[in-house]
Image (cartoon, rainbow, N blue to C red; front, side, top):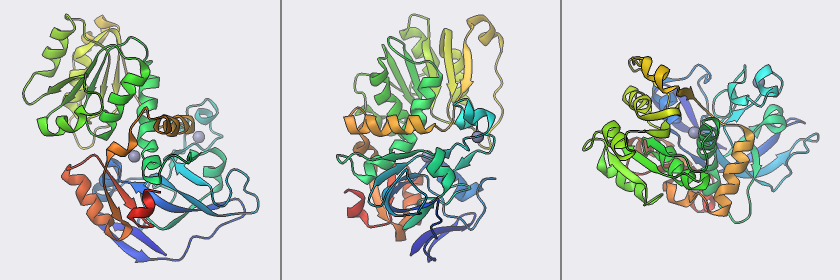
Amino acid sequence: MKAAMLEALNSISVQNVPDPACGDDEAILEVHACAVCGSDIRIFHFGNDRVKTPAVIGHEIAGRIVKTGSAVTRVKTGDRIALGADVPCGTCRWCTMDMGTNCAINYAIGYQFPGGFQERMVLNSTTLNYGPVTPIPDSLTFAEAAIAEPLACALNGLELAGFGIGKSICIIGLGPIGCMMLELSRVFGASRVFAAQRSPARLDMARQFLPDARFIATEQENLVDTVMKETGGQGVDLAITTAGTVQAHDDAIRMVAHRGYVNLFGGLKNQPKLTIDSNLIHYKECFVMGSHGSLPRHHRLAVELIAKGAVHAKKYVSATFPLEKTAEAFAYHESRAGLKVVVAPQGEKAAWT
Ligand SMILES: [Zn+2]
Ligand SMILES: [Zn+2]
């Protein structure tokens, strides 16, 4: 079979590899869709401690079970399955406290475990026992179901920040996750939604997801001043940084309301440290927190929200590429021409079935 192999930094090529073996407690998933994530691109250029090359990465996955070991009960041959990325070990202190995103081992598909940029992949026993392995409703295509992984991370971010009915939010950064937060703001019952993005072009792509949000192009308007002015100087109940920049983090702390939450959602890579007057936090009694990844229950909810039409997964998929063109799919992602790119190891048509 074919696999897009990450051989070294900045080097990925499609190769013929042996089919994965299936142990008694394992299953084989035929991958129909694997969306490209910003973190795939970071691994491609900069590597990751949890990825040992040569490796197959890719963790936003949907496909069909084609083989199961004799001891497997969770899935059966023919099942259509979406996968999340983070796999709780199920036994460490954090996992037993429903805090699997902080798992002491921190397993993830497309990291220590083989990923989805290949025709078939093994689901090992840890994944089958504790992982985000979610059946796909008949109404959803594989390409749509693959989008559940990043959506699950967005859900975790809003849940941990205690977001809910009647609260105001500012989403800083309108990439795919920022757009998902826009849709989720409505689902969660937000009162007011501010949405910020540097360039007006990217911002225009986001408008469709919540047309009545207040969109701010930070190239043209000062974000903090605008939010403070339009909230009567009060700020927002939740400021969430879906852009991983120091500026976003700084702005978020400045615009949050008293007793509000700041979720530093977007991680920083190779950037200067955040320096801020901590009295801002002290006197506002605000909560500065972070979140990353998701739990299997978030992934199940994400699939459900997509199936219900609360989140329009189809709108996020700007392009599909066959497995042979995985490198081109990465380049497309980096060009920022669209939102999400899906690699389709069984062909582009099959991804939409
Ligand atoms: Zn991802
Ligand atoms: Zn654990």
